[in-house]
Length: 196
Image: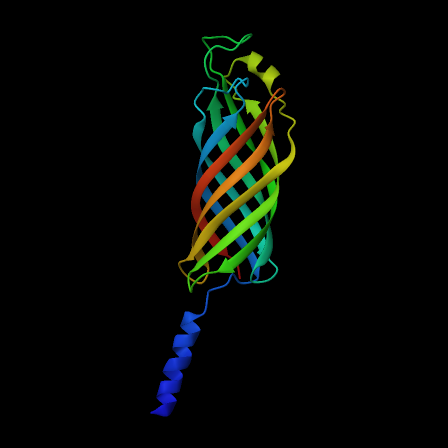
């Protein structure tokens, strides 16, 4: 009887332990809602500044709480607001933003299935006109890009040993246009697959 109680107690303790992220490789993909924030003098000011985007990549956890990840994020596109000097009023003023990113990640287990994480890194984001946009809008943007700061916070809900549901809020600062800085924030939901 005592042995049975001890077994049940040990099993209960094991189930109560937080489910920390396991060291090793993982891949992820998500859909996101993007919001562009620009200065009042930017061609994007007052336009349609929200769109759907996506994010894909891979990471490696060195320990249960510290890792690194890299990937590609597509913020979707934003449309200029109102009349802009030098641009056609009859053609689209859409610009797209995307690029690769690299970030460090710190994770902490909150329960047997739930964990929270934060990340800090850089992104080489490029803002460029859509192919059907007014050719003149290219003069407002520097499509060469540059490495700029980014951060994110979110949570992971483990579904199985290898699969997890993940949600994240990210902010990507100081993306380039030639006269102003453009900031993009995202709210994403996706899946994470642990390999091995």
